[in-house]
Image (tube, rainbow, N blue to C red; front, side, top):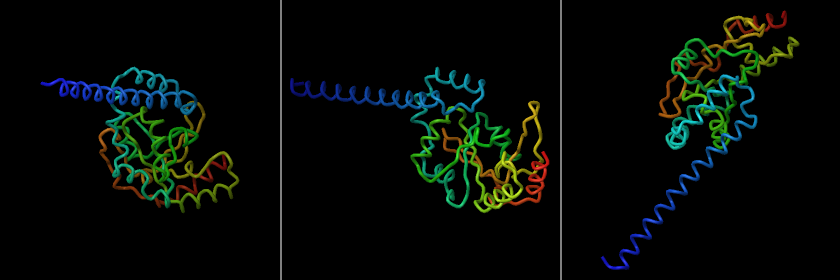
Length: 232
């Protein structure tokens, strides 16, 4: 091997190593930026237990590789999540266990007081969608998609306003079961399962659809819930 060929090989090896270091640095910078944003206030609504779990996750090296394994950007996934978001109000919620995701499909989405503590509004803006995903994805591999027809939102928002109820929003009404008080005397709501579009494993890209999904679902129980909340 001549000196020129040898020099070319060395240059190629060094060039490859520089690219490798650049990729590693970029991965760490993205991870650090996401983590700082979350710890600076994005996740204030999370419980202490959930935050402790998140901090433990930071210690796992698998988080670095998951930045590349994540299938969230696949067209089939983003279309399932954000499709029809112009006609519907769409939200995403993360959970760790698949059995919990299945339970939400079968029984509906349960929440206390405010729906927006764990549910993020979804738009067709891919950048906005990606930022929101990066801020929540470490809370679970399973992304629940909730979608409610805009006409249902409009109808029950108007009904709530007419009833003079200022403490609650439309999502507090759309439940088959009457609101219940928990041990802390806070109301617990369970959004009807018909508004659950399904869930996505954002690591594998697997999509599970809810066969009962109906974003325009309208139940007589919804108006009864307004009367219950108005009565206190």
